[in-house]
Image (cartoon, rainbow, N blue to C red; front, top):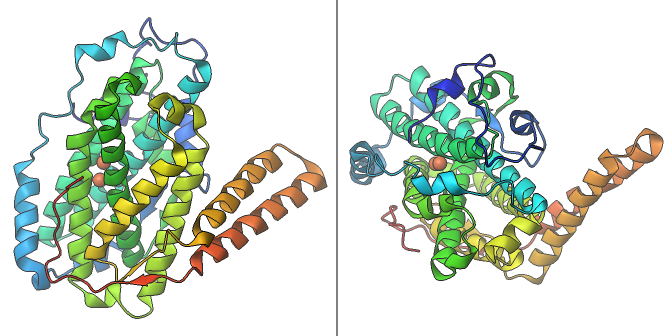
Length: 371
Ligand SMILES: [Fe+2]
Ligand SMILES: [Fe+2]
């Protein structure tokens, strides 16, 4: 399935009518995706001129091989839904599970689409042919991913109006190096999440409550390749992964990991339906991501440190308190929000200051997906 151009045309474009199996009390998913919340996937913009000057000569051989692989487009025919998709009993699904699953799909669709928009813009604004080629392959993949998830949402009678989203969502400016750290991590963590769920459901197919999970293996190989591209871009310029920049790498690792922890803990019914224990699943994803990231980051977070889990739990409690405080008005609400914000900041400092493990970067950067 390719990106649904109809959904990208604009706010006037009506979505198709919901199928008969769709529940009647559906949420406004475009509004959910448009909402800017610290935990929601964001839309980014950057300094495209700096990006255009990227020189990959230092990693030339590995780069050429990766681009050839992307050009060959191994997942060209992968994202096609099957008849199985028509028989999902959305209306009969437990309402809490349905709400959390839709939330999961909307947030995944937004994240995929945010990648698509950023990569497409890089391709459009660039003049450096290899950078343009890379970003055109990656935006092609992300458009497919977003469109495929949107298909699942449409079967539920909802769907994110992706065109509307590009016009109305707030864009966050990030310097190119921050884009590399954040996007590299989100691609690799995306791979680790998808493959962990895929392997789990391979062993426990009775928990596969929607067919979309069957697509995760080939899907996450796309994410793996995208992560490889950012790894090569960073390794092509040693300054990006040394000196004071290591403090930024540490910051992004802490922020990305703790965000995932809080987000996943907000979906207990979804994980229960998958038969996944959230703490163990998240720790496994951190472990895989940290292992892969040795290709590019000279440090690694110590996720076995006793303060790690305590800090994550404190962060989660702070976000739960923040959500509760948002419902309150007046001075009481303001004080509660301030307290929760302070608790989240303290939890972050506690996580950030855990001593890190050092790691010597390998000569050869590229890895194969092996999980
Ligand atoms: Fe993707
Ligand atoms: Fe990706």
